[in-house]
Image 1 (cartoon, helix red, strand yellow):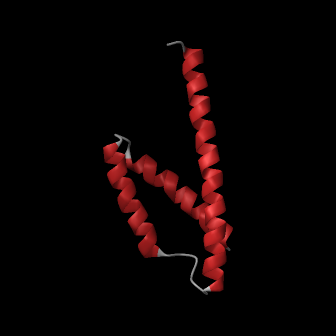
Image 2 (cartoon, helix red, strand yellow):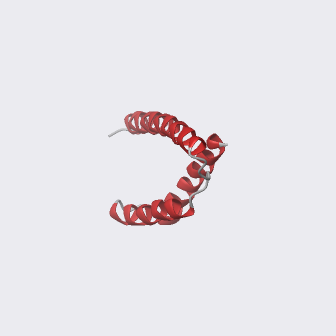
Length: 85
């Protein structure tokens, strides 16, 4: 496979990631409304720990560097908190 074809594949994966992040943001906005209505805190440390534990397992399953995956999702979660404010 050529370099240009591989880059086309990467572009398709990147577009899928962007679409998935957009879907996630819409869900976070719905969660924010529920939390506000029920007067729940934005930060849920227990839920975040559950996410990080699952990410560690998935990192092993998909042969990804755990540190990289955790850093990526910490950024995503930080952005989710910002949306919920």
